[in-house]
Length: 307
Image (cartoon, rainbow, N blue to C red):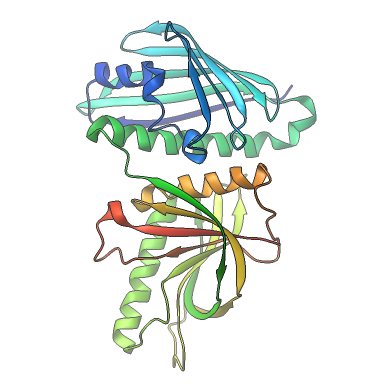
């Protein structure tokens, strides 16, 4: 059976004893779990002795986690069992090391796939790794501040009217999206201010390329524009975003947690909550201005175009 390993780390500004205590208590997982956020109504149950917990949901499937070894406040070892969408067992660990005045938390998984799913190994490592990164970011917020500024809403299908746009097309490493996109929007904003043009709607990003194996993505970030735009800088592009209907996941909170909305949307698709179109690329629309809006109130709508 094809084996795989995933390992991700983050530094949390808190003593190891505090971080360990939060991770050790399964009831404390709800605010920062990268999976439970996709299905708030998921059934979760806890063993009376605090050594295990289990979940059963329509979106995230079912399974359980059992604590096997503890070395407080340095490490924990678990057994992770999935029952749905397929049966599997993995070894999961947390390690806590003092670093830079805080605690470096390393979350790892050693597992294997059913033999007939060998072709999914690279994708599985990437997807689980992204889940772990999302979870660690939320754990950091939760330990440091007592809350996690990320909220998802699932309004179902909504229409997008389409538009003509001016934007910048970029391809970069997935882990560099935030910096790359920030730079692109700075250039677009400067051009708008210099040209005196007003956007015809909120800005957006269309994701047209994903390579899990290479860890890269391609996207176009832009503003809807009406009328003549004149001569454009050489790196700018124009295009048409088509009108469509999409299954929407709406995220409120800092952009660093937007991965929660994307992951939840993909989970909802796999659970057949919608049938995604292959003719229109998924995209995100930024519904308020980050320059004037506190980051905890930023609203982003993720559209998964439907057939």
